[in-house]
Length: 359
Image (cartoon, rainbow, N blue to C red; front, side):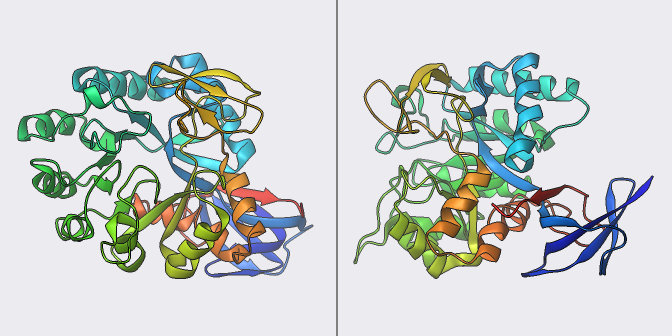
C-alpha cells in the first residue's frame, strides 16, 4: 500500500523546508520530494514525537495497568503528537517490579490497531540513592547486586532503559553489564559526584534522567551530575520542560550548552491529560491541583502532567530555536534509545508523522 502526504512545510534533517511530498509504502517512507504532489496541507509536518519516560497518562498508571487503561493511553497519546513511548515503572520491591513489567508487556501485546506504540519498558528503580528519592520509596531502594541484575535481564529485549545511581555498591559493574546487554543506562535519583558521573559514562551510561531533578546539584568546584552532563558529549540529557521541574533560565542554559543532546521527556503520571484531582503513581496517591503540577501528600513534585507537544511549545516560548525544540522530542530520544528508523523524515524511516497547525 502506498500513499503521498504533501505539506507546505516539514522538518527535514536540521531545518524546515517546503513544500514537500512524503511518499509512504507499507508503513515506511520510500522517498521525499520537493514540491507538493497534489494539494499540500497547511501547517508543519514533523516526525512523530518519542517520549522515553512516561509513568502513565489519561487516568491510568503503568504500575497498575489494565487493558482498558492501556488502550486509553495509546488512543490518546497521538493527540499530543506522541507516536512511540517508553512505559516507565518507578521503584517497588524488585520481585513486584518485575511482575509489573511482565503484566505491562503482556497488556501491550494485546493492544492492536491505531494509536501510539510502546518501545518496551523503562525501569526507574529500585537501584536508586536514598539521598535523592524524590517521591520514590527509599525503603524499597537496593544496590544493584549481580543477582538482581540477573533478574532484571530476564526481561530480555523488552528491557530498553534502566535508571540507576552508579555510586551504589556494584553500580559501575551494573552499568557495564546492562550496557553490554543492549540496555540504555541512565544516571538518575543519584548523589553521584562529577567524577562518578564521568566514570558511569566510561562504563557505558549514556543518559541523564530528568536533569537537575533528584540528583547532586551543580557546583562551581563539585560539578555534580548536571555539570558533567552539560559538558560530556557522551550523555543525552532528559529534560522535563514543564517549567516547574526546571525553570526557564535553566532550560535556556541547558539548550545553549548541549542543545543537540537534549531529549524532552514528560515524566508524565496518570494525571496527564486529566482535570485536577487525585491520581495514582506507583501505588501511591498524587494530587493534581489547579497549578497543573502533581504532588505527593508531603508536597513533593510527583512526576508531571506535561504532554510532549506542550513541552515543545514551552521551550519555543522561552526562545529556543523551534528546529532544536522539535529535534529534542523526535530524533534525539529516538537515537538515545537505539531506534534509528524513528524520529525523522527520510527514506527508510517508519512513517510516524504529525501535522501541526500554525498555533
